[in-house]
Length: 120
Length: 107
Image (cartoon, rainbow over all chains, first blue to last red; front, side, top):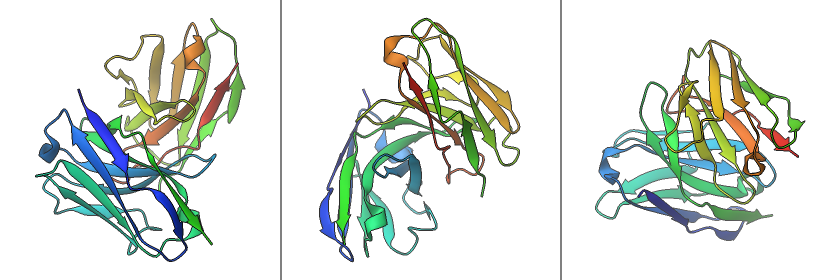
């Protein structure tokens, strides 16, 4: 059974840094691409970043590029999101999501989310 | 960037009803369209992928259709547990996959 557990969120001052983690189990972690998606309070879903299997290729939403870094440790079945220069607009629940590749790639499993609150 | 627009923003319905939710893409995305359900305080869950393929374990009262720019999610015989927010997502520009703003389905 696939399981993703997000952690690392908290309250942080504007300009600060935070590292989120997502520990996975129940599937061949190294074989799958993984995403981070966030959701501001009362708002919709926003794609954040993606890392391909193997960890070489990474992609970011424009508003996060240069501030956020996605990485993975396949030996620990863990996905990371390093967030620097945080601003209040980064306040959101952050979810990791496993990509299922098909004719339409989708997010077939999600973590429970971890809340990041950036204070000004 | 491909913009996804869902309509309506909210919808009231009753148990047993049949409802249709719409999603429009700003350009042709073929059948690169997924649907998710999100309940309060929970992560989203995948319902439909590739416009019309039912994800394993999802009840058959959910169905999706469409191609190009216009897509629909239909729920027949609404159940209490179906009242949630529904999001469409385009995967044409994967891995950058944008979501619609959501449709809230209320009793």
